[in-house]
Length: 236
Image 1 (cartoon, rainbow, N blue to C red):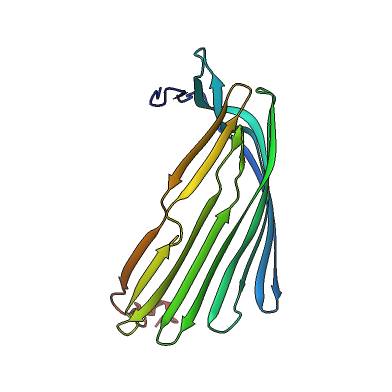
Image 2: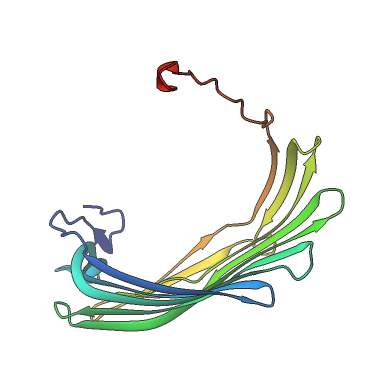
C-alpha cells in the first residue's frame, strides 16, 4: 500500500479480470478539390472495464484509491482528417475529433456520460535553398472520467529545417510551446464522500537543435548469379 499521500491511500488489486472489448469502425475517403478527406466513426464497448476507483475508509477525511472491474463503458468517436496543398510548396494536414463517453456501474450506482473533443494540425512550407518551415498544434478539451473529470491539454511547436551537405544531412531547429512557460493540468473527483480538486503544472517549453546525417548511398541492387541446372533443359 502506498501511504505517501496521507489523505488518499493507494493499493493494487490482484483480483482484476481481463477486459473484454467489442470495437467497430467505419470510414469514408473522398477527394474535395484536390484535398484528401477521411471521415471515420467508431464505437468501443467494454463490459467489465477496469477503472480507477476512489473509496471511503474508516478514517475521517481519508480515502483509498485502487482499480476494479466496476463499469460497462461505451465510447463513441467521430474523426475528420484531411490533407491538402494550398500551393505547390505548402502542405496542411489534420482535423478534429469528438468523443461521447458513457460509464454504467450498477455496483456503485454510477451513470456517467459526457463529451470531449480535440484537434491536431500539421503544416509545412518549402522555401528556396532547401529550407522548410514547420508548425504543429494538438489541443484537447477536458474529458469526463468515471468519478470526475480529467485535464485539458495543449501542445504546439514551430521549427525550421535546412538540408545541407548535398542532401546528405539536415539541421532542424524546433521550439515547443514557446509562448507558455507552464500549462495547468486540472482534474477533479466528485463522489458522495469526496469532492477533490487537483492541479499540477507541466513545463512543456523546449528548445531543440538536431543534426541528422545519412551515411552511405543507395545504389542499384546487384544481380545475383544463378546456378544453371542443365539436366532440366531438354535432357542436354
